[in-house]
Amino acid sequence: MLILLRGSLPTTGNQPTTFTSGLRGLRSSKRLPLGHLTGSAVGQESSEDASAWSVREMRAFLDERGMRHADCFEKRELLDRVQRALVSGETPTTTPDSGPATPAAAPAATAATAATVPGPTRTRKGDGPPHQFPEFGEVVTVPSLEVEAGSFIFLHGFGDSARGFVSQLPNLLQLPALRYILPTAPSRGGVMRSWFGSVGGAEDTRTMDYVHHLIRVELARGVQAKRVFVGGFSQGGCVAVNAALSFPDTALGGCIAASTFLSPPGVAVGLGLTIAEANRRLPVLCCHGDADPAVPLASGEALVKALRERGVPTELRIYPRMGHAYCPGEAADVASFLQKRMLLAEGAMGLQQLSARRLKSLLQEVGVSTVGCLDKDDFLERAVQAGV
Image 1 (cartoon, one colour):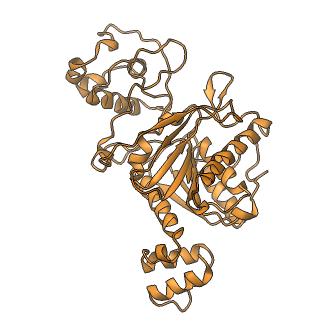
Image 2 (cartoon, rainbow, N blue to C red):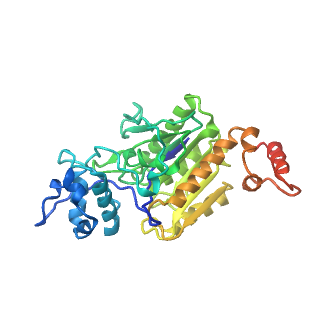
Image 3 (cartoon, rainbow, N blue to C red):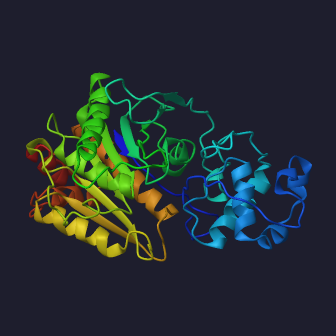
């Protein structure tokens, strides 16, 4: 089971784009009001026309259609979002003036993912928070398309919500046997959603307890612990790492830390990190862009260093020119990580499906010597003997 917190999507090229939360702004322009670009008018609007809009106009256009954009820090990112809306024919939504707009429909898949979107449609179910945690937002569940092989709890980033991933995450990872659980952080001060409260305060403990509750819900459903994954983006990734490592009940399948850091702002790196005995060998995959302006690569590297010093098997993947976002290469690495862990949960039968190279890499990851192993059968025998 993997819990993700926030992410971003690939564009049609190698440049990443981000998931964002909506901002409501004012528009001042002599052009035709953007709200009039509906139906056939939207289809006729060209990319050249959109590129001439001001940043203010682009944000207003996206607001009217309930499309997120708060994490678009550059005009090219806004333009990409606007062009997607024009191509898909998104029409303005009728939302109250107070609060961020809610998308009327899930954004269309980008060209980078459209070709591999599964044929069947996943039924998305949104529920309110558990009665024990009323301050948290809705939990969106996306069931598997095939026989369920694992659960992935994914935490969004600061200011976002579960809805920012509901249509995009399954399309990015292309794991039809995976069930997604997408929680929503509390609204702090009635403004922005955040997993953190005051530094080191009771709110942060509540967040950890909440994530542990979500894990226990999956275990109570009968999901094998090794098939439960927790992950997140940015602030959500920080929570995911800390919650997964501190889960005391049983060993989980793994953790994904995307574009994130180890400790909340104002807390020294690694200070207060709790690692439960059950998860001291929890596999962690850290992914980071080397051009991230929001969470510098150095923060991700510090996270990896601190975890390795505590004996946590941690992998680091760095993506050239990727900012605070998500890219196709990262999606492929995350999917591979999850697939491998789900295979391992099958025991010897799952191990037999791995290549000799992957078996050797796996043994080395968990600290098992591969000396004397000459072929796949040798690696497989060593893995079984070691109880991998």
